[in-house]
Image (cartoon, rainbow, N blue to C red; front, side, top):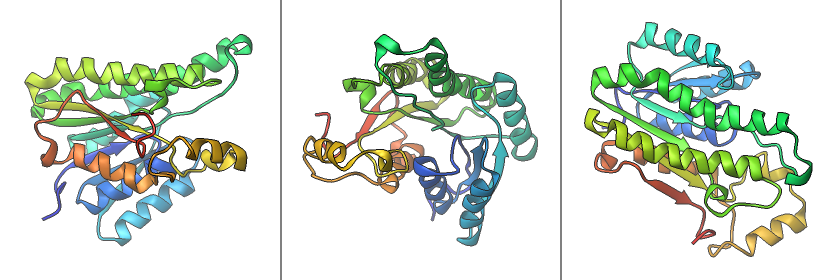
Length: 248
């Protein structure tokens, strides 16, 4: 029996990287996965095809979490077809790094709008349907830098720290409706973003990780599947750190 059979899942920003791995993992466990994207329909369709070819169910859906009107239209489109969304993974995110002394307001707003405001508004759009069903699991993809901070990433760190606070607040508000809200905070994960680092930068980071290696997107995805599954029915308001011990 698949752990998520019969569930409907939306994963924002799931055409590549950690989001893609999460979508594939949820699909393997029986959920019908809505694969969200903004500018890469081909990659989103490739994720959908991979899930379907493995015997699962998946559908692409385009909307930008930084644009409230697009969120509302996207959620409306999904609900018209499936009537419910029982699992929401707020994964969509961007980073624009730079030292605070020279950081622009435009970059700050762009990071907050996608990473933090987008997560809140997407969740908010689903609250009534989830409360009506009296069931739901929301998983926010935060980051260990939201716990530790990181030089040159003030906007990104603030957004990810905000997601952790948002997780706890929503968990307290929604627990009486049997809606669980948790976060996953990945550490140094092998993705397209980390591939841009220099060898010296990677070496310096690896020295900080007790397990001595980068994590994989699949390892983050497995944490998400756990939190979305019945195995985590008594877990809410928590942040599961997947970082090889980096932040302990």
